[in-house]
Length: 354
Image (cartoon, rainbow, N blue to C red):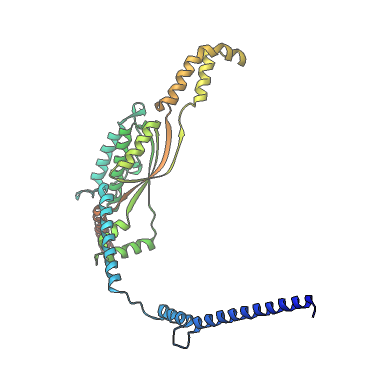
């Protein structure tokens, strides 16, 4: 045997030993895997049996909460109920008060007329007042020559809207609003299915303790579309006043635009008046630069540093929410009014039938 053949034989023997060792390790690993999967001869439970047992426990066995988990659940329910009550009391500070017991359509219309006449005289930028003499603050159909007297079923809603609008107008007047151009009461449309479901929920809530917190979970609100002219600084006061008000207000759909002349138009007007209208543009700029520089700087500095000189027209949607006990009183009064109206209609129908 040559030297080269001996080398090849040694290498082949080493490769065979490596293959045997690798095979042994693979076999041992496979045997351990099978033992872990199916269990061993000493009775240890395998992975397959454990998995099947767990699946059976979670999918077929009935849940069995421990006493500790039940105590924790009850504790969580108590904490949540206390939080709901605190939040309800806090949010309900500015709820609309319930209407007086002697309120009727004639009394409401008289109070509405007196309050509107008072608000029309608030100071502002329309001839020294906050609105025109014909502005009726969203109650056009109940005031004026063709104004109707509200019906009994309308009074509770109109009273809440009336109190909210007077509160907002007082805030506008205190913040320095120049003009109120639009107050629109957005009527909430509710279909019969939702009304029936809400009525059934109210009946169920009256039978148990859950009804104590139900008002907080289903707040009543009124929406208004507003347009008003205000300076930039007063506009900030309006938003801050709405945020700080005890009444729970939410502002949405907010947009605004500048009212009156723009800065460029005012500068051009002053420059044109200073230089004359018959000269060329270059001559006007050269001759009028020195004359109008002082006026231009005064106007520019006034507009930049004094927001009072640049009024803006603001459009926004304002929502007022009620959360607390007053809401329950109003709904109870509404249910009583609906019952009285139904009895009246039934009596009228019976009388007509005779």
